[in-house]
Image (cartoon, rainbow, N blue to C red; front, side):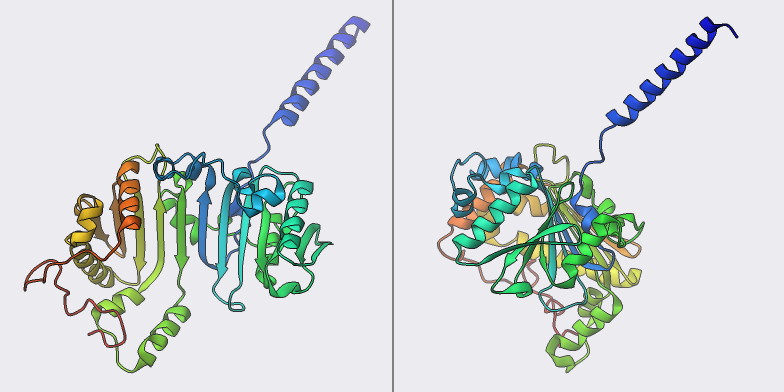
Length: 358
């Protein structure tokens, strides 16, 4: 092989390596997701797309966007932390100690900015801020209360964590890949989020109710004095539930989507009938009509398909904002006409959900 050919081949190989290296180096890093910090085994999960909320037509209509006001935290930190938060996830375990919870917030602030802000807020409220390292995270907490109150955990390349107890460490482990994530499981919270279009929603709530929890709830209602009726049993047959709220200009057809998965199709049928009775009763309420939600409730769809109940509510941002403003501005309960027999507002015998329900 001649020298010229060898040099040509070498140049081609170097060029290919440079292109490949540039492609790899230039590939975008996976976006941080707060949901990646939710551990498997969570009972309740709430995710909020704060960027969608900020640009929401509802928030603008209510005057919560662009207020330019400074609260105590903003004055202490020199900026509003919420303005730098992109999304958040709240996870609650089914077991654990009472009050255990964890919050993961994706922010566009540096670790130094977050530590300074957190310690300043604690000290402004009379606490003694303690900063130390733990499992690769910087932990900020009140030295006087220790682990009794919420702690803040953060490091570069991760969400900001707020929580207490072992559950906070479970969320940190889930995000780091040292523990099982709810996002990697095909069923459970990930599937529920997909069922209600959670990836494009401003707010998504999912709940998984294991049989043990539902049995405990049954025992706690009215101390288990009497067996429940059809509606009571239908409610406790729900093993999974989810809801999503679309609040932005891209809300699409449905502002709210919800689903509930029952143990049996018969239980879902009873649950649908109960929800339909409630919908008609609320839609016929004079106060609901006055604040402007009557038409939206009239059009609400409640359907049962096998072992699932699905709910869809359509309402525009101005409609929702107007209803909220009117509801908050109400000075007294609305006058309600006395219900007549057969009216939609007349409660059915199975409306009361307690241990005496028959």
